[in-house]
Image (cartoon, rainbow, N blue to C red):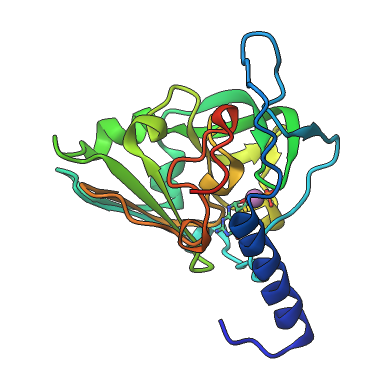
Length: 220
Ligand SMILES: Nc1nc2c(c(=O)[nH]1)N[C@H]1C(S)=C(S)[C@@H](COP(=O)(O)O)O[C@H]1N2
Ligand SMILES: [Mo]
């Protein structure tokens, strides 16, 4: 990503800062996260706005051109067009966002296709254990299959009843509420099932392979 524009240098600096946080264990409070008593995971603060975080590229992918490949350790790989994706059973899920940069945003209403529906279609092999998400911007994020298969996880195309904006990952992003938000890829392009875990973009830069906010799995 050697981008020498001012914007490119600014973004490179931001990535460097977040990478340094991992090296310094920044924001770790060590407070016990009790999810039954407290909705806010340790070290987080609630925000009412919705910050945008990306690598400096916000791919412009019209729905008509969008494709989703799902492959790897599955019995039935797919390459969905928008029409095929839209023809799947749809769900609404309300969930909280927890970003590793310490903001949390409550009660986001997402619409889309549940990952459980996707799993029904592609049928992961018995030895599949991990899922690598790939974005149109080259971003990757790895998650355990058990987390990916949670009942509240979806491939979201809408937020609060409106199409997901480009800056927030439209036309389609993953939303996996039980892990830090960097584990929810925007501008979803490909979902790869794997038998072995493989570090994604932030995981290669010091961030946790799982990323459970309640256990403060920020860095790993
Ligand atoms: N494709 C892609 N997905 C991504 C990112 C990214 O840079 N590219 N950033 C991640 C991070 S660090 C966070 S916190 C959330 C931010 O989503 P938002 O911009 O909608 O708040 O997206 C995650 N998914
Ligand atoms: Mo993030």
